[in-house]
Image (cartoon, rainbow over all chains, first blue to last red; front, side, top):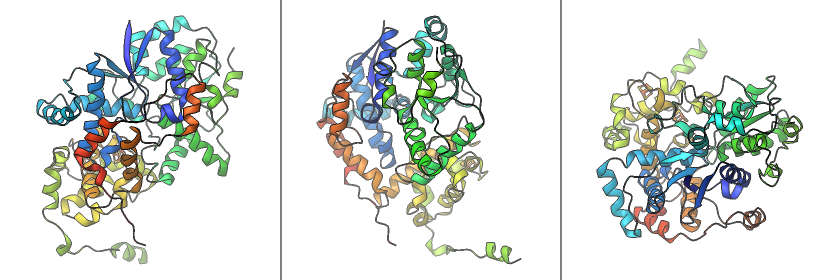
Length: 290
Length: 179
Ligand code: SF4
Ligand code: SF4
């Protein structure tokens, strides 16, 4: 049986609850047991801006909390995944680990270097597998053309994810989408960042990045974008909405991967996948599913 | 011709006396920025940078060069160093393994100590000490979580507060931009 500590991060459990709801449903469906650790805190990614040391300490604190319980971590956010995986890498160095543990001792924690972190999509890909997902599909999603978006920290820094997938020409999300019956499209700006981490400092720059990708979908008959990170979601959904207040040209529904998968598995769209919480109505997508 | 003249006229020429010859070694002394010594200004980082693409004045290559020239004040006080979207492209593509992304974090850390951190990041750190996450508690999501039968979130994280105070990052003051 698969068992993980569920790392919610900051944004999913407060602003994108539909991602949490759908993820819990999908995990339950496939027998992936999720353990909630109430003491988990922010992954430390944004704190790196002010202090690399603080960011690493926060990540280490979280890793230690999972390790004490003998659990590996399942993440939902791409940035948490990147931050925790990078911390694991840094903490492989004994001197760094000793330094960090000296501080963690003050809060009676220690990190021994035994935790693995996996994003939910990777868990579905590696632990469950595309073939098993295909066999479970109950509804016909073949009428859907969707644009996959990986999220920068899902596979970067590269060294932390080498054994899984390289970030240059990623395919795993495409395959996970295909497994549901929907068609993942190829597009030029696939690797373009959502701008979410620039947003707190410059909304304009972040909006430019969002528009660049959404413009790429014009005339490509895309029904929805499929993402695997709540920050990317907020950028392409809520910020799209904001951009559309001025230009009204996109109106593109945005789904998180566990929601797409849940639809294929015949989950209740509102109760089990949280589709009622979307700022951009997914009705157009639901109408295309039989 | 006029256009060429205009380009040749430097907007804010830097005099040699303003340069800090120690700046580069100070930056490179940080393990995360060590790679900068190998930078040969090829510009691959800027070419793949999404922020550079939409705002050409932001340029990793230029910032790397400025550090090597010793333009301490110009680099650390620049609002641009905070525009990075953290996409890691510069690091992935650099032929010299510089990891400009990490160099930039070192620069931001130095700038923060000197009072140049944007309030957005300073506020987030203050917030994390209070709730363990970067947002304050809101009635609206507490209610929504209940309605959706999601477990409640713990709001008090004394352990985190303690380690953050150990690093002193909670004492950093936000930048004050003069008009
Ligand atoms: S890609 Fe690397 S070597 Fe080239 S300019 Fe950028 S940091 Fe320097
Ligand atoms: S990590 Fe920052 S500086 Fe590097 S390419 Fe991405 S946005 Fe540009």
